[in-house]
Image (tube, rainbow, N blue to C red; front, side, top):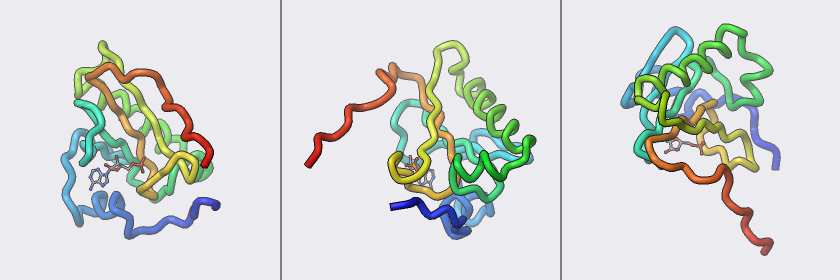
Length: 128
Ligand code: AMP
């Protein structure tokens, strides 16, 4: 199955950006919003999202301006600093499309830390 790259303005992060539903905000600038994940996988688990309408990294790298791209990456660094992880380390990841099990169809970078995060990837599931 091919992931649908048509942006759906009713996705939950679009509603957060429009202020229709609340979020636990960590950082904001002109192009970017960062907030705590509702189901944290580590003591720190923040989602960094562009305010623009991009489905995922595939969409973002093709269509976003250099300013938006720079803002997103800088925001990750700001979040790490705000959460006190600049020294201890952290992991960033962004699930894009089907194979990565992306759930919310608005680009988001997970920033996790404040525990030993182990190795990068789990083992693949055995073939059925
Ligand atoms: P992904 O599988 O990469 O698409 O991850 C989606 C993430 O969004 C999950 O970690 C969810 O816990 C998180 N999430 C879903 N709804 C909300 C919400 N309203 N506020 C904060 N995080 C959310």
